[in-house]
Image 1 (cartoon, rainbow, N blue to C red):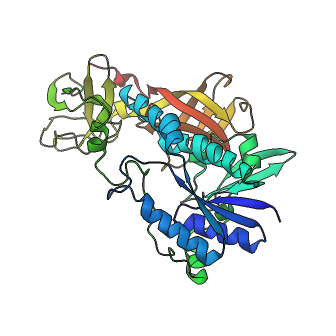
Image 2 (tube, helix red, strand yellow):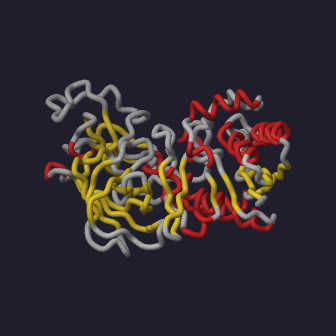
Length: 374
């Protein structure tokens, strides 16, 4: 049977992936990817413990496991870009870049050297071949679908990839893990990326990015506080602004005296953070976005027309129209204004269950004329 190399993370999804493939008769080899070294013995980054879990899983399933260090590639291809984006005032998504540059490039290349015909991961997505082309599909469990993070994969990568748990619901994966007797059957799902983990985000960025405090202003241009550095804030952010006690009489659009404040804009040139009161303030709503640095899974852009898109992972598909030729830049117009569309995040386009690809959001246009800065 063909050899399949499985990325074993120590989590339950990749463990069940390996077991399913072994049941199907594949020659399965496990690979544990070490992507971060700076403080991997800390309470926040658990790669050593994760490797122990992955090795235990391999032992129960009866497969070999290899520990591979991709930390240098990760630092050069993912983390360096992560820092560049934050320093420019944008909010990147390192998981998207990690999939494109590490899990489906460095890892895939390594697997091929081991004689693998395919690789497999525990992502909740599917691949379908139709008429000689490969399509990236959503996972069957809508609540766990991870196609958003995989939208930068190309035809060559999709042709070599299997996503066995994409055909299952998470509850089934957990049930299988318990039936098999996997040691990590009840292990909590990981949240975030290893180099940040559960630690305070601002504390982590402080190590790498110079902070330059500046004014926080409301829509009237009044200074109502001081920010710690624009890189530490993202659009739509509500917590950690340090202005919770400030009231604004007559706030509109769901505001009010005690309405919470949200980050609405970052002016890098003037080092100013603009905040608004009320979740549905016009400054937080966008009807159109522009995205660049595009990738289309089919190799080329889809034609203009009606589709759906996500501008962040935990979001329902939003009906939209793809405007014009998407060869060089992606321009989307939404049926309903979208909340806190954030430069640096990914805009991902869907045609039903098919993930077509997408790009990095570069700009968003306000839904109403009320959004002009005072």
